[in-house]
Image 1 (spheres, rainbow, N blue to C red):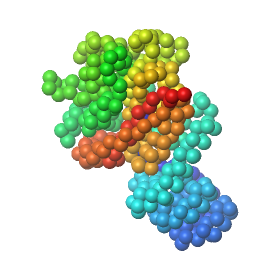
Image 2 (image 1 turned 135 degrees about the horizontal axis):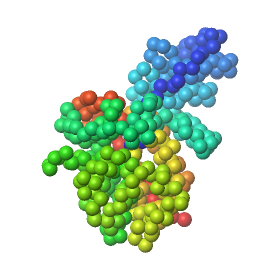
Image 3 (image 1 turned 120 degrees about the vertical axis):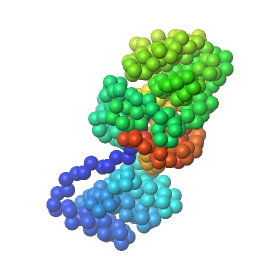
Length: 385
């Protein structure tokens, strides 16, 4: 799963001579003095500064005022759209709490503009995720290589649902996801010559004869595809797949290793060649863990070469910044723009998931990877010329 909690903006050392300007800027915002705000910004007041008491930036205080001119002035003056306070809330959430749709859309649009500009200007080899869709630590949740080397545990949470926990206590997959996986599969093509590609087995472990953690490959397999390729790299999961007979499922081919290796240009012919008439896959789903947005974006670029041109549908687990509604909206829009860049059109399906907010779901889990009442499920097809 590509996801991350909202980030805190890195604390920058504020030169002593700018400290008065920073506090004066917040004071001007709180009194809604547009002229004062403009003058302070022109004098070099840092629009990114966050106070110690609440962790609020000037953009948070402006959002509280429901003053669009004030918001626009600060955005033009360099305010940071995704700075989070002590509770992990951006200025966008302040707008949402006040029912200020106009203000929220201004902040969201600035986020989309900023992130698109970053990706346009960044070198292709850059590994930094500007939107911070990667966990900011060295645990297995924050690094795919560390995750692949980590030990996984399958257990039942206090809510009675199965879940998978990594060696650092982070949730990898949890039972409340089942309806979302079912909806992903339902929206994929079905029928004769149906061919599936799934990146990431989904960690669906059978713990007893009667207890199964539902995962996407079992759901795909129930549709009896003529071909079904699974790409999986975690050795513990691969061993489970051998032990439970996944390798013997009808039409199944397991590609062991990371997708980045299998989808290198020199191997694409081998991957696609097994599909009917080597025409590509009619259903492609991606659900990896501890990968950043740049990894997902790189996979987008492969899609035109592997999707069936007539029936092919692509979808992915959309956990992009899914502990914060503003970051989630910006990240989803960014993904849509990048998918369209490679020649596909995207449709979004809104799925409510109230169970994900129940506290007992997350007891004993170090990091939440979801904290929203709704899920934006993407499906994408090659655009018709």
